[in-house]
Length: 420
Image 1 (cartoon, rainbow, N blue to C red):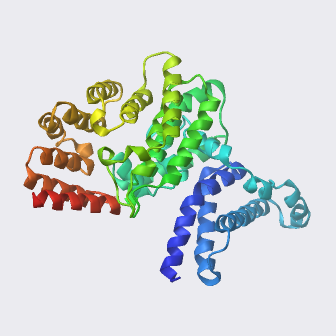
Image 2 (tube, rainbow, N blue to C red; image 1 turned 90 degrees about the vertical axis):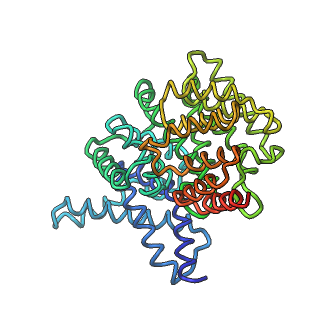
């Protein structure tokens, strides 16, 4: 294995283990910023050690042990800095006794720790934008660039949000816990948003060589199910779980033998996971049974249910999907939702109607670098027989995406349009 291969493996392992490390360390240190620094120290240790010794049999356990040692060193330095020199001998003896049980803490089941980490990062002391950015960084393992692209804002803006958020949490002494009662309700909407963003990053990776990162989506779904148990009377929690269950049911059909993307209407629906669909539809029914006006995740789950109930693509109830997107746009106006609605209108009323809506979004500043805008426009132009224009749109979309699989798909569609 070359040095490049080893470094790539280390980065991949760290990306998988990062959230667990930070969550376990945050429980010990009560400081998410410090926890992230200690986890990064463990990564640096792996980058120094593994090229010489090889990849360990249990790389996750190795990183946990490295993080544990660095946490111990941190506590020692902090404690020693607080004591006079002539007291060091006595304090050294009490240090190990008083220190948190790092071994058991880091070896514990970290499932609840991840949820604590999300609730901590979603504390009201932070702005909604800072909460999402910080959680995507700590739990989702996204880079600053990836988060910036997900939010359609500049990378330095996200970097500043994350730095300030960690500082604010530390200065405010925010406890590392899942809150109860009104405090939990106050943070719930932000937590749901962040869990769904994590799911989406796994469903369609912002960057990289893979079309999906299923482990990330599975983790988000698991956290959503835990949250549904903690808040069984919250319709929107069940709405989000329903949305993720149904979307996750398509994973097996979203890629071909070589990992190439397969779009929704081209998927073999026999490969959709029927158990997940049933779970999703049951969660949606539960959300609806709890009463109240439908909220955003319930509406999105209802859209996903329209797709799930259609045995073949042509049976999809597009007029209902258009109506659901209309209701969603009224609740949470967004150019991305309008773009999705344009796709649905294009299917329900014809590509010309969809293209008219897409063109109305062309001057939208938030979509300036959003690759799905030219991708959708290209698709509608193909259906209208305007192949030369479609090719240009697919090529523009390919330039904007950071995902290699998606780039290849878009270039293939551009070549196909050019051939017609």
